[in-house]
Length: 477
Image (tube, rainbow, N blue to C red; front, side):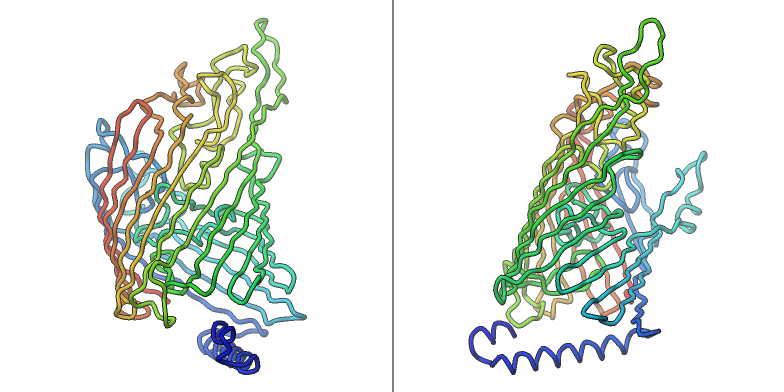
């Protein structure tokens, strides 16, 4: 409608009337599908997902993430597996309040069944219990307040770094695969979409998010900007169960700053004296991300048929592995210090409470360093002319560290916080390439088939590869 108004085909009055009628129609449709209580519109939704997955190694469960493929000289890396699962199914609750004094507010919560699980096997739990008695977890839970001046979101949702989830790959498996920014946590963010012209918008964001470690004293700070051109749009399905909706040409750039802390303890006292337990060593974590959504075959009539888009993303930084699901580089923590004259008091320095892959003591310099991470990905999707009901896609992604191989710790398992870190256990690159096909039989019924390769390069030069074939069925409501 904006384009018709800009070209003078319709008047401003006709435009305003059409927009008002469209809003009334949307309101009537929502009221027909939602429960209303105390003027609140309550919508219950979600999906049931049934997965059939075959791998040529035993490296992963449903979520591939950025974990390494197990080496071929291990039992898990030398044998295949087939399993079924409904654990990725999800239930959502969307509650919206009516506009009050120009302010709109919303509560959104979702829960799936991929929570933390005990190990499968003789010392853990049985395969039957693992698959049929999963742990529920909070996937998202936040409140959103929209005012004429600013929008405020508080709660657990996708990190605003990389405008996460807006440039994700709509794969069949959970989109947490190598090189994909994919994580949610508690945050407080402010943003506002600003219209520069009738079709061009600018959206700045600023977010205060969870500290990168337990016992951290500072949160992470994220800032970014997104530019979007509404005059060029293509359908987009950002997840395996997402709605097919039009998304404009857009570009984002964002950055994150954070502080990683470790208890240095001071040099070990040769006379056995007590080191300074409150002595802290700090290192700066930082990251920069840029993403592009490009409609290569844009929609001409607002429909998805015979359209295509490309998504590209690049990230670089240090101390940001947790933005990539389960990325640790094989650098477990607590970290160790092998040089007693470096200011790190041996095993005392082990009290870091840092998740694996963020920072450690370099075996090359003897100093506490943030682990560097660089990634890139490219993804394409094509929607067939049949109203876009079938669509195909594929892509490639790789994530790499230039200094993870320096974080070895070979003195002893006790000295290294429970596990030694060698060139055989540290990995420096994780890559994936994949292809898939989806089909919507009805609005509720969807099926998909995917083939996916993941290749891990270890610090000693060895490679390991996992090939997955996945067939999934979805019933969305």
